[in-house]
Length: 146
Ligand code: 4NP
Image (cartoon, rainbow, N blue to C red; front, side, top):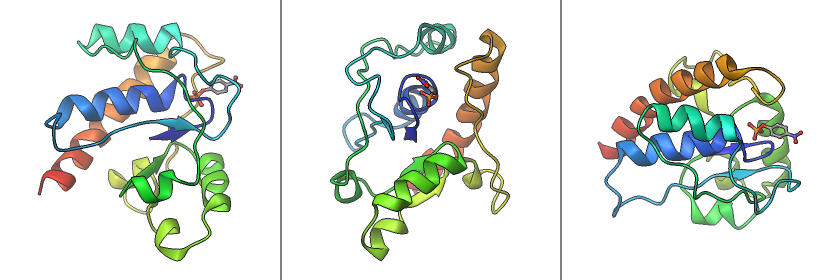
């Protein structure tokens, strides 16, 4: 799960998808295309909305996306078109490029809908993002559990 800062959207995506999958069989992680927040906890507003729905993301630590992630993970889900461009620019191999998907295309195929960055908005933006990610993580969990 990849966003810009790895403190708002992708930590939620990580926590939500983990909650829908058996812990032992899947490696779910998140990262940011930027490293400014590396080592930090998720944004308080992301922690709060996750907690409201019974998910604890408070122990996550932000990190920057690295090219080794292309080999570690089978699926790389990005939140918006800017993340998509940034991650694709790091992919040197075709099979790495193919792993990168705009996350909401799993729900709205081919529509290129973005998960909006809630960082500069209010609490309701985090609620909106949570609901979007919860819906799409249902689809992703079903896909990988097939
Ligand atoms: P995220 O949100 O990409 O969903 O983690 C942001 C967090 C921090 C910044 C931008 C977006 N920032 O500019 O610091």
